[in-house]
Image 1 (cartoon, rainbow, N blue to C red):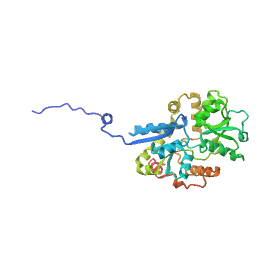
Image 2: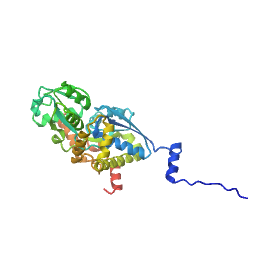
Image 3: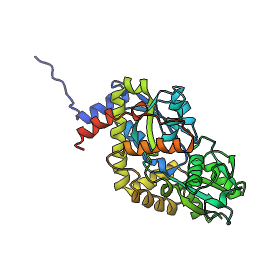
Image 4: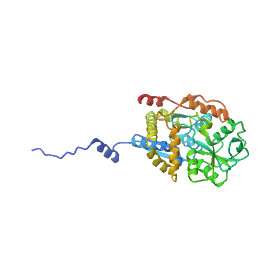
Length: 328
C-alpha cells in the first residue's frame, strides 16, 4: 500500500520571498554610493538606490556635506559610485585620478546666488564683500567666479571665505557672517519659506544654462569589472527620472525624508522649478555637448589648464546599450 503525503504548492513569488529571507538566494551584489546629504535635489538619486534594492542589490549609502568628499571616497575605494558634480570629476582627472562619468543625474545648474546685504543687487556689488564658499575648488565658488567674469569683473574681487557645504553657507547667511553665498536652489527656497532676510541675486542656471552639472561616476577599473551593475544603475536612474516626472506627491514625501525639516511649500515650488527646466529627463540626459561646455567653462575660469578630451573622463558605452534596449 502506498503512503499518501500532503503536498503544498507555493506560488513562485512567495517561494522566492522565502528563499531570499532564508538566505538561499544570494543578493545580486553590493554597491556603495556616496551622495550629498540634506539636499532635496538629490531625491532622485536616493530613489535610484531604493530601486537598486528592489532589484536585489545590497546597497549602502554614504552621505557627505559636499565639496570633493565624494571623489575622495571613490578614489579611496570606500564607495563604488558617486552622485556628484561634473567639475569634481574633471578637476580630479586633471590631477591623474582615473575616474569616469557613466550617467547623468541633475542635468542643469541647481545653484542660486543669495545675499544678506540689501546693497548687493548685481555682480559689481560683490566686490569687497565677504562671500561664503565650500572651498576654492567648490562648484559654488566656480559659479560665483563665472558670474563675475561674465560681468567683466575680477573674480577675486570679493573676500572669498571658506564656510562649508550649502547648509553651512545658508546658516552663515542667516547669521550675517557672510554678505553673500551661492547655495542650492532647494536651500534658497527653504530660507524664503521661513522668511529669512536674504534675497536672490541671480539663478546660476541663467548664467550658465547649457552645462551638464550632476553625474554618476566611478573608478574606471570598477566600471570595467561591473558592467551589469552599471547597467542596472543606469536603468534605475531612468526609472527614478520617470517617477519624478509623474509622481509629485511621492517625490515630495521622499524629499522630506532626505531633507528633514523642509517646508512643504518650498518643496512644492522646488518640484515645479525642477520640472520646468527638465532637470531629470526621462532619457537620462547624458549629453556630450553639455559635458564639453563644462570643460570649456573650467578652462575659461583657469580651474583647468587645458581641455580634457571627453573620452578620457566620460563613457557612453553602457548608457547607449541601455538606450538601444529601451528603443531610444
